[in-house]
Length: 441
Length: 170
Image 1 (spheres, rainbow over the protein chains, first blue to last red):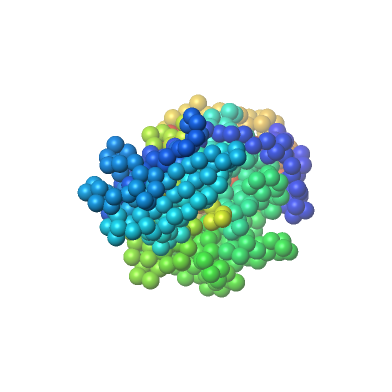
Image 2 (tube, rainbow over the protein chains, first blue to last red; image 1 turned 135 degrees about the vertical axis):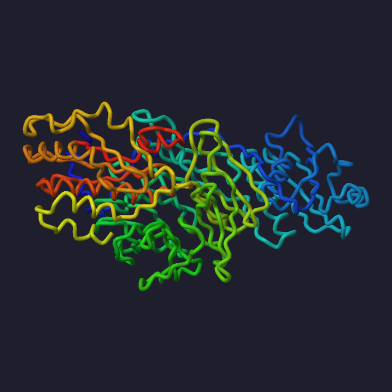
């Protein structure tokens, strides 16, 4: 007999009471094996850039190769192709030592140089960005970093370089949350991890014998909403990503699924089947008041908000197969949005609201696709057989998703133009259900 | 699919054939690429599980078979599992203080949240069958796991067939 049977879980539906659960497994954050990026497809339109190893003015070595992290970040964006270190014609550490003609000859469009000096137990990092073609310095900055913050400092530098060249805010200092699963049957283990966007610094923030799915970041990047079966049925929780403190928001009979924060962070859209079949609801997080938005016998789930917070998109199989629909966030008539293909689900908007990313099925499997909201043109972005759970980077340039590599679940990412992609394989177990954080700085 | 919404209010006297017809109208869309898996026969799943409810004495004993399987893209109760369900119905009616949780599952194809809905439809089809037999709805709870907790790992039709299921958990 299941342990919760005796509690009468239908009464837990009134667990409304916001049980503030401080589980032991939440308070300990264990370091996990990092995910390591493997480039699977480079863009043929990537801009060549030379990132020279930063000169180190201290004793011994640095705990992190800052220039390599910057180079990797830029490469993973799909917009840059860093020159290999062996092809660097010289190793300047300051713009004063740069001979632009040397870098033009190796076709470097941009050049990054820098140096790092120990300074009172910390590090002083100086970096500069040069426009090789224009023969001028574009950017230069000095920052101070502790040893433990060197990776974060490198991501910050990547953000500045990316924005100076592309005009688009960099998203290298963001994080991802994802679910890992290992074992089967009685030995199945599930965990929720938060990691840097490049897969490093993975921290386990929840572990469970029961399934966890659909993590979603709050717009302020402080909290994660997710679905956990630990009570014997699906329930929606909201957890502080750093303290582990959490509340159970819903545990109605039936499905409690697909939490999605409104852009202002005040509401949570979700799918609840407490009245018979999954319907879209919106909860006011201050009052806990629920508003039901859909009412029919189909499965309605996977809500997401337009960036202006006025419209919801959701999956419904009211036509007999799952398709995406949109409706006012206040309710009303739903309008079908997708017409290409017999299976479209899990819609996610780009930050500008002009593009809808989704899972689409064709003869070769399930892929991440995008639909232009003006022209309704659909472009398939990924080509493996089992791609799902797309989540868009806060600057709209990349989409992280779940895919399969052999028999293993891994995370993949693809640029929003489809030109570049990479994978974040796990060394143990399956990883899936990724969600990209908002900007955190 | 509307039938679902008022199925619970239909008289217990409804024939089983009608219920089966209703549940087949649900139109689930478990993702299949080539359409061939719809003909998946389920062979091998029923064998070894044949000691169904019909062999038990007037519902005194808890049925030994606790899992029934579904065809691709369907929540229809397959004829070979009706005796299993009748056995559970007899057991529950003979033991009115017994509660069961029907765990509904889907195979892995398609998105996880949508598959929660598919698993729930299957469990609801079993619930309808049991209540038509006379089981009190108050004895039945439903939990859908969707594609979570697969019975069999793997990306084969055989694995999918064993994962599209409803499990009786007393």
